[in-house]
Image (tube, rainbow, N blue to C red; front, side, top):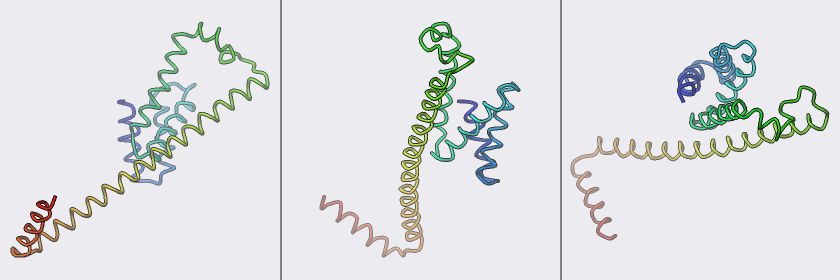
Length: 171
């Protein structure tokens, strides 16, 4: 949660406000990778960080990237804790030399995961956009009502209150 708030909340939020979205995603990913202080994993963790920044950009929500980050860490923990058991059940994950069928299978599973993630992000993004649009409409209506109240005379306000009371009495 703290990494997501720091990197996708603060860092990505700041960079995306100052720069175009693609450089903001790339820099967020690079800095996230460097933060983990492992040169071997810098590229992979950097790509993960950039992908999570893209998720935040697309869904307009840090919660989705938090869940994805949690699932990634949980998967790594399970593999670390249960490597011997997993090696018996899924030996293909631990082989150094894969044959063509195994490679195609792993790539197909990876592509399926990416497609599912994109569909998930699109669904969440559309919900967030609709929610923001509804809130904007409500805010604009309240602002318009506030401006009308500020500019209205006492007689107009009294008349509007009377109409509101009559309307409520009908219900």
